[in-house]
Image 1 (cartoon, rainbow, N blue to C red):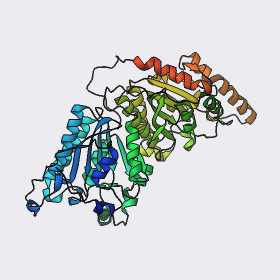
Image 2: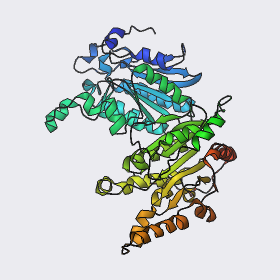
Image 3: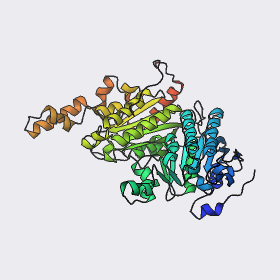
Image 4: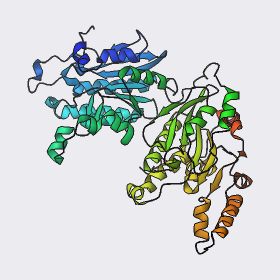
Length: 494
């Protein structure tokens, strides 16, 4: 049925209307609405006389880049986009149908929260959605766009999905809003400072993408869908004629590493030189920047990228970086996306702050995620690979299929200075310590030693990396895994 939409009311808030958002996401003319005639069943607090069109949420199917998707968008102009039983039921049934027909779900969240007049029925609506979110996990990708307020129980549906997009100045996510915080904690705080787009993109890590405006947001969602499978078992063809400037990139990658092993550099430069031209699509870019994750294409095929970034905190693994890496590895494994890991890590971060946050528990997530992942796994050690962090970053010991190391790679329990400081703690002569340090580097830290022990597949020049990685991924395209023990599921250290 045709609807009358209150576009002006949303535009006055600097926001698009729900139907405009759907049209911005989907290919032109492809959206097919369902459950348009659904209405609330509440007969309390004057609700019996209210007509709430489509119960405040538009649901249906369309296409993005020619492929089918399920979409819902909450309409803040209709009863504040509040969620009641029918509203929740529409979303839950849409997700259930998307599971059946194997297509991603994209949800646009813009709601005042639970419809108070419906009481426990509104909570039932949320519960139905959460249940379907979990059923869909690992079966079809789920993408959440927060394009307005998202408070209380409403935040947990996005929290259960694979990717969350936020938009500057209009996105708000929090368990309780500023008014409740003031009542309970006697604290004055704005919506933006409590749960705005920057907070969740930079500090909490809840959001995977922060966009300057809605147009950028929908363009990025469409771009993301071009990288990832649309359902478990989806076998995508390689992009046509991938571009790769071999001569320029080979020359550039050979010069990336600084002369000093203690000097940082941006690992994104290495990624860009190995991947197809302009194909790296970073995820969670502003959070835990000592780790870099995302998607890229190699010979036109999507790969999941995980890397330490020496340009930020030396690339050390801390609680936040561990969570970021583990989550990305598990998503890629869910949908059979091969993993390419770049390693330059001085270790897990020391000190009481991270210990008290639970670095043991968080770091264990990386070990678990890589060990569990059965997709093709290729690792490149560019420089440092020390201690437990060496093991954690997809070493051969955790099931990497091929591990390559650049000639300047340093693979050891710890750096030379730290090792000599322990082994020769009583030695007072600095010259002796310097000599022993050099012996340690030559005896224990070279990639040749690891290669002789069968821990490294080959020591390669930086300019060989692209060819080696591409050849390795081609060989692994038919990889199967049959050594999984019989069990219901493992118990990841959450």
